[in-house]
Length: 239
Image (cartoon, rainbow, N blue to C red):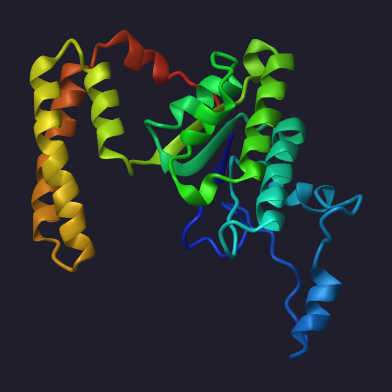
């Protein structure tokens, strides 16, 4: 099971696949509807009130209306740990660099004791908040007490740092120097294409994407029998 904790464009907390939808307001008094429908954070039934809606759900997405304020991040921290402790979720994903969040994974797994380095794994200023540090501590404590089959894992779902991506990909592709060389050559052109796209010109990005697809296919073919890749396909409860 996966807890997705995205950021940008996530104005509401949502349950993906089986959404919790409060009753629609019967009148125009929105404030009255909110008072009648909202579940107060801190109330005894704050989480159990929605547990039935989560039965059978494999992916839960948690967002916030604004970045950086305590209440949203503390709520997401509490929700994440409730899902881990009571609903069997074992993967936490963030809108962060897939390469750099290995620092977060190493910390919660006990392979590293450097909390500050783990926070650098989020790789964005908006995530550098004490509530996220506390979440990593919570997940670390869980893993320390949990058995091998109940370990929680942390990963990023973005590729925001080109240098980190290049370093990680070339590390994984050490037996394939030609593929590593292509990645090193592509990285600066890809970064320039993304910047051009931000300015309204996506021609370079379209060209790079064609090249990326060719590289992806070549990597798939070259590593088809790689034992590490075969093992990763057996990861349970992933979505």
